Image 1: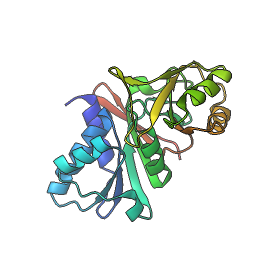
Image 2: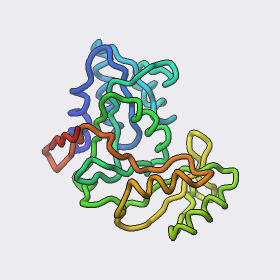
Image 3: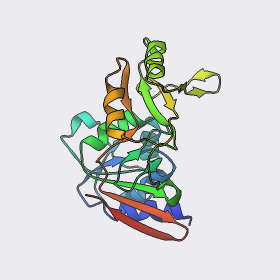
Image 4: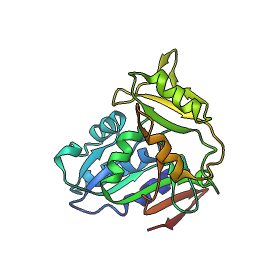
Length: 222
């Protein structure tokens, strides 16, 4: 069993009977979903809320009951991954392209657990390219507005085609180095017409479960 699997399964220990559980996306969340599926087969009764089409397919594979986010008034616990986390629990997400749905689920969750490898912990956010989700309509103008901010955006591709999110949007990845003021950057990005959301997840996570070789560390933020 690798460290990511150990950490993912540790996160599932916080899942209780009757919960509405946000099911995250990506490789670390995969192990948590797999473990939830095992517990469901043993009698655990939960409802999942999926953050991506891939997650929905995994839920079906593991016979995890899931529901549309519009059919619940809250989410008790969300288990997800992250691409970077700073010492204050701020993170960058969206490397897999599900950042908008992930942020909607996270913003409506009472508790959030991120499962990551040790290397995802950083002193300051920004080494990982920050994903920005943009409307296809007028996307070149949105990219131009980013360039005017002194940011060089790179439109994400999937082979020779433009990468498209589950919501039908494009992703621009921006490499800006260490982010000195992530709250100001978040505000500035949201002021650009056509930009729907960005991958800065600020002041959201409650616990981070860190896979470190054969050990698991738990960091509590709020």
